[in-house]
Image (cartoon, rainbow, N blue to C red):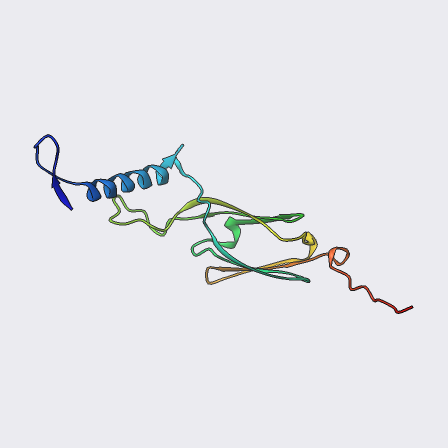
Length: 147
């Protein structure tokens, strides 16, 4: 909505000003820091499914090669660390929405997992993780006797 400004200098569109300010803030937060792009807290996107035996986790990481991926697990914390290379270098982008560079994603799990029994498979940009719960940490069913 365009309105006359208070000083009579011309018409002002406050919504357009807010959009420009938001674009500038987004640009500043996604700009290079020390020559490298800052890691994004939301990349990669993950889904996790848990049951009493373990956790199945999927992560979308298109453009990441297996040799550029580091997965670690400690107690109930999973860390995905890696690097996504640029598909091509361009001097000027019209639109740039796919992050590139280093990333780190730490995920708190609902229980401890056995680090010796983690299985990882990367296929077509989708990482599949199978995280097994240690036997000693699984819930035990208690038999109740009468008498």
